Length: 116
Image: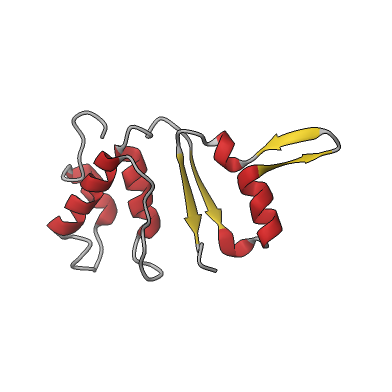
């Protein structure tokens, strides 16, 4: 967690203000703070429009990874082969191209619509 910051900060909390009672709950604040402190891979699930992308960005911004890259991949927009090349890289005609996972090393990669 970035020194002195937590999800209880008013400026940070403003990102989550909405109509959902869960969004404004202390339970959500606690869950985000726990996710930040764990510094582990994270699965954020929810219906469309519930703020999963905002939560992912918030966890990134409050974590030790905040100064590292943040990237989003929309899995549903790529066929499996293209997605594999995007994530893991490719070598063509003797020229290697690093994949997103290597380029963002130490940062955050969000896989949107990964179940598609």
